[in-house]
Picture (cartoon, rainbow, N blue to C red):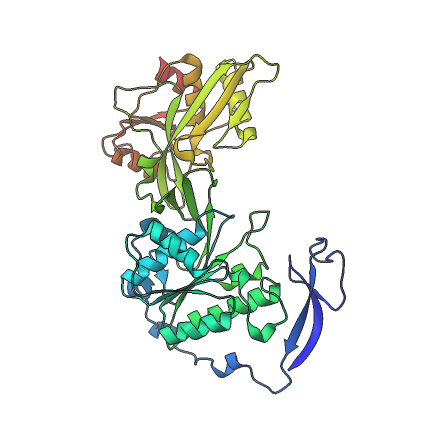
Length: 458
């Protein structure tokens, strides 16, 4: 085997025979590290080529639900497309403390209770630390769940074959290394990609396919640490989002070869671990009696992945005693909030130039799309007038700078979710609904924001 020294950029993977202070490809500073590159002599075949499988006819390949590991964690199943595919490689990433280790350990124990041999390998925690976390979040630990604290992937792969494992969890890929590529340190582009390549080869093996879950670290830009090639190599990339101080955690599929990209699941972080929120439409709305109304609240329906989720928007409008009123949008960008306030002032004559405006959502849900804009403006108007909106009334619309209501995608599916949850009336833009007879809910179509305000507050 031929060995030569190269310098590799940890940001983009660019290789150069000499050290450089600034990468000529990605233009990042001080990202080069020295590594050894090994190449096979001409005529020599690598182990992977020797063990390669033969081609098969596509129409003879069998697929189905039996090829998935369906867990008891419903929100996880939804995000990955119905369960883990048995010969897939999945990356779970989140900022420190996001809950990725807690989630994957729960998946591992759940799979073990279903009779699968599972190995949880950690290069970050000791066996006693993993056991302490398991005692805290599980009522019982299954006998088929094995743990291993080691940073040598060669030892992990030997244990996987010895235990005949069906599922393995690697926590985290940046802490493991292969002896063949020493002295490259763990976390370097070479070790990370080679370790990931070995895990992919293990998962796709024809003799015994293995489902692999890889935990990935994130950098200061909240991106998966390491080369972008790592994301292309695996089948599914899941990103956990949520403030460490908040209860809510969301799991987003940024890539999924076996399901919908962009699908989202919700979890609640408790002392007993991550709890799946199976009915988000109930979780993100304050439970009140029908006659119990409060000013400054409005209901909307947003889409998270393929699923409509009912969300409650709250606002507080108060007099400002400073020249520059406060504008706080915990659930949306400040620029978006300022735009909506300007439309309210100009198109509806609601004076807010001397008012503090604070907007948030129940449960901490982020409003990533425009369908909730009408609800935001209506809850602000409710605070200004100090008049409540009925608990069974909802709003689904974007609002243009002209004050006109604008259509949003999948309106009928959103209305069906409102009807399922018992809402009685919904305001939508004119011409956005073909079938107005959806369940028992009344669908009211209007053209302008001012018309909605006049109709709701009389």
